[in-house]
Length: 121
Image (cartoon, rainbow, N blue to C red; front, side):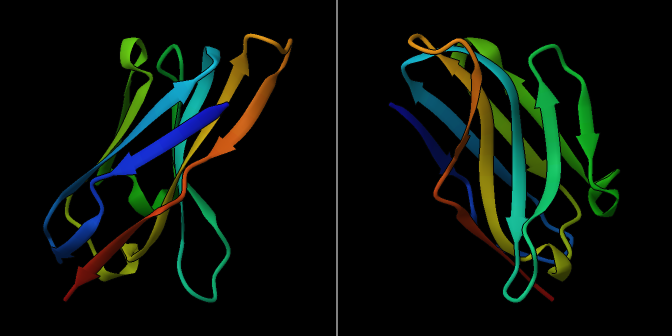
């Protein structure tokens, strides 16, 4: 069993900031990558940012310079600091984790339930 618990979503004004958190728990032996995806109504889910265990990071072009992803390996937690928010950032944000469990020899992909982020103009 692996569970991802997201928090930090809500309503923000354009130009404001929000910080999302994702805590992974359960029978986890190691976590390879942690990342965030988002999805707006009528649109495909898209990658926002991803970070490896050793700190390599990729961002979507639309959030470069505004969002910062980080992780605390000791706490199995990933963060997404969103600065200078725009209405276009509105959507459901999902935590994504690739992790190995004690009873498997491979990495599996896990998803959080999603947290709503709404940015008003």
